[in-house]
Length: 125
Image (cartoon, rainbow, N blue to C red):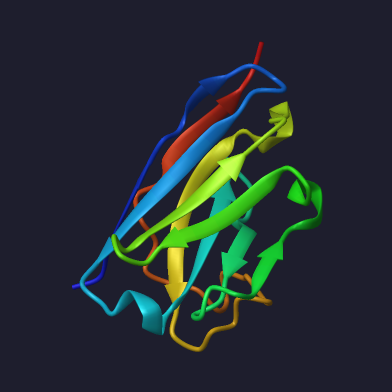
């Protein structure tokens, strides 16, 4: 059974930093692209950053380019999202998901599945 467990969220001031983690189990980690998505109440879930199966290809949504970094620890089946210079508009529940077709460049809810429970990120002064 696929399991994705996110952690690392919290309350941070604007300009602050957080690193999210997603621990994966129940599948062969290297056979899947991994992605981070976020959702606020009343809005559609959106792709934030995705990484390819071989971990060389990375996608970032325009609003987070230069501020967020995605990477994996393949030995520990974990994907991370490091978030710098956080803004109030980054406030959301962040979840990770997987795609066996390696559509990391698409980074869409139409391509990824098996969502974790999410971790809340709140950016506020």
